[in-house]
Length: 417
Image (cartoon, rainbow, N blue to C red):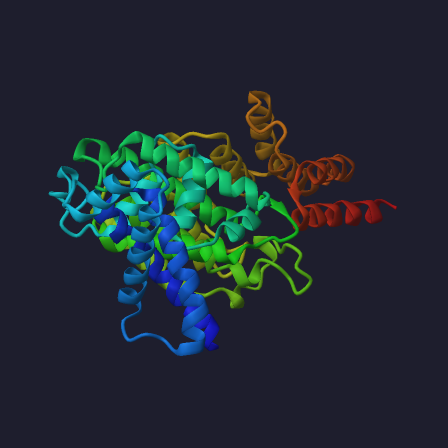
């Protein structure tokens, strides 16, 4: 790894800690975030040329604090300038842990920052963007590129999110005990969304965006370290590790999608699988069962099987049925369809798809049509399967998935010809 890359990785790791410290001391999330970005830019410019400082965290904190104070002192309105400097000079509510922190001594600033970025006043899209910017250390340009929107659009989204947090008057603290479970579920969902977008990009030319899935895993580790006894936190981290373990085998040398059944399992990351299974096992023995633990258990059954044929599909079906009772959704039902087909035959799966399509939740989903096509192909109905593959290809916005579906359709067309 070259020096520039080491600097980039280090500042990305330190950025949320520095930001969290500033917000805890001074409040003013938006001003603190701007000051940290200026400090990161200075580090990226100076460290490769002058060498790494002995205390990189202290260097960044000092520079960011200086930039914050300079920015406040340059306000045009004299009254605003004097009020801001006075606020910096005196202790305020942000200096001490709030009442929500008292019963969680292991909580650190990064955890508080995660909860702040997932404030209920923000939309899910804004929660994701602000988390990646403030906690993940990604630049606005990187986040915009990941979600295929103009940088100006993403900058406005992040700016509005910071404004909403400021307007809410939220203190830099963990939510009170009675509201913490609900907020934690939002944090977990945001990390889940980030990971999924990295592992299976919803649109664009690339199948994978590893910078997002890797960052989601890093943040899940931070969360699990702070909340080691929470089963769903451990379940989410286990799910990410067990899923990400298959990443290198998920696309071919040409960048095209390789489905699970056709992947070279020798390329799967066995160390990640072992870690994920260990996390899951401990969580299942310690805490009440949750949706992320169930999804991790399903991933573990896949990862531990030598092949698709030797996969314990009955266990997977039982886990999906339990997951559907715990948190019903059209996506969970669609995933259960595949397990039903593997256990009871493709016709049983197709009957369930007909019910799912009638509900309308996934009527225009390329995934529903892709599963339908696969099951029709299993029954030997090449004509209907071809039509379903072609329809699925028109519905997806992911170019690698579209190429894969078109390839399946072309193969059926050639066989018929």
